[in-house]
Length: 414
Image 1 (cartoon, rainbow, N blue to C red):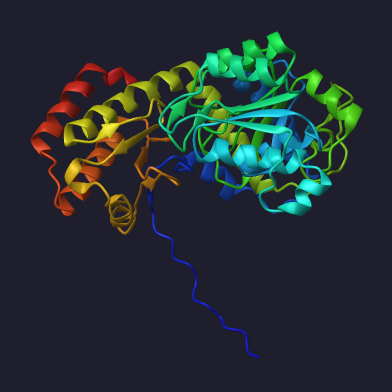
Image 2: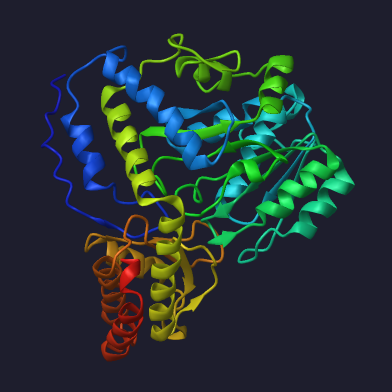
């Protein structure tokens, strides 16, 4: 049989204005493209890995020695984080959107007994995992965490810090404090908050494991490294009980980054073949994050999200989110039910907004790595035009007035 030779891909520039991935910074792409053909043991690649783990500790705000990047997307980091959960472990998971719901599924798979897995291999109904469902559009609050941990007395608890499925910020302080009170090992999905929010993980001692991703706040291509950080208590748990994992095993991964027996060492041990291109891009994205400063970047997100929020509300949309990198909204009444049509209309014009991935269907518009007046103006105007294209109302004079007023007052935020 003759193999078909397909045409080369021609992927156009797209404005990634959804929950993530975001558009990677040009500086990061330049470092990716400029990396020479090198193996994973080339000295500059190894130097880059050493420097990355130190930069990550600063960005995370931690003294955790086990802080590094797991090769892959955010799911790779999350998989590493939940690897310490063993069959039969009692776990409480809080779900208030699509992705915290998938986190809960990951935990059910990890904690399932052999019999539970055999009964439903794709979606095991694991008796030891209690999933606390929070209504869509609401945040997980301190009382919900306290009540669940007091009642169930689990070994582990997991919560998403920022849930992009619904655009809600959950109470990380309440979660950490409750985990401390009840002697629970907390796990946090920080996929959407790292690099966007101003926080230090060492301020939350009830949390033993953290996992994030490269393609949102860090803005470094989907397939580079997912930042993770683990306390000594988490690593002690792994040493005591192990994990049914190899590729994403936190101790094995840490050794490759030169973290052995709780210390930084001169040379790590082999675990996987790292890419010189990925290391170069990740290194530059972390340098860029530190140059901009976590606090300044967080403030910039707050400023520009508030402008976007005001503009879409002026069009008649109802915003139900409270994240600063994303607005989740209901369309005006005359366009309700046409969310997917609107999203596809925008995507056909290389304007990448997203629907929610579950019920109720809403529209998500993000500003990842779009932190300047021109970028937000472009997003607002393109969304307004899409609303008009579908027969809705979006008064451009009103929109222009909002943009001019807001940015006239906050030029420094650019």
